[in-house]
Length: 192
Image 1 (tube, rainbow, N blue to C red):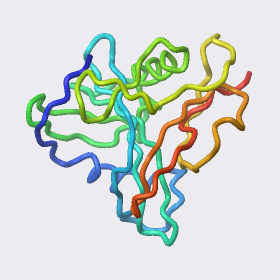
Image 2 (cartoon, rainbow, N blue to C red):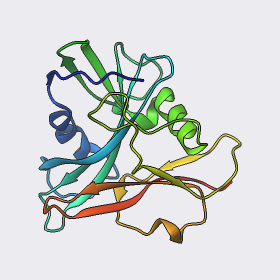
Image 3 (cartoon, rainbow, N blue to C red):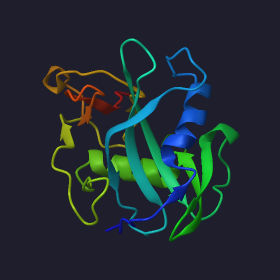
C-alpha cells in the first residue's frame, strides 16, 4: 500500500493543472486560466511501489455552470520515455520524495494497468489522503469482456445514474463548489 506523505509539493497539483488543462482538446471552458477546485477522486497502488497513482476530480468554477473534469495522474521519480510531450502535466518538488514528473495517466502504462486491474476486481481503490485506507465509494458496475479491457476515460464528468449502463464501468463521486454531492461514470470498458 502507498504511504501518503503529509508534506508540500511545489508547484501544487492544482497549479500544474490550471496551466495544463486549458491546453487539452477535451477542455470545455472558455478561459485560459480556469479556477480549479479539488472536488474528489481516489488513488490506486502500484504493485511495484514506484509510481504514485491519483485519479483527481477538479471542478472549474469560472463558468456559469461548474464543470467537473477527471484527471488520472502518474507521479514518477524520473521522466517517462516514449510518451508524447503533452502527456507531461508538469514537474514538481515533493517535500519528501524530491523531484516528481507528473503525467496524464492515460499515457502512463502503470496507471492504465492498475485501472484495468480495478475494473477486473483485482485492485482496491484507496482514499486520496489516507494511507492504507480503502475507498468503498468507488464502485465497479456491470460485466463485460476481460480480453485487454479497452478502457475509455470520461474527462468531462456528468452526474449520471450508473444503473442505466450495461457495460462495465467505474463510478465515483465528487462535490460541486456549492457543497452538493454528485456521482458519475469515470471510466467505461468499451465494447469491441
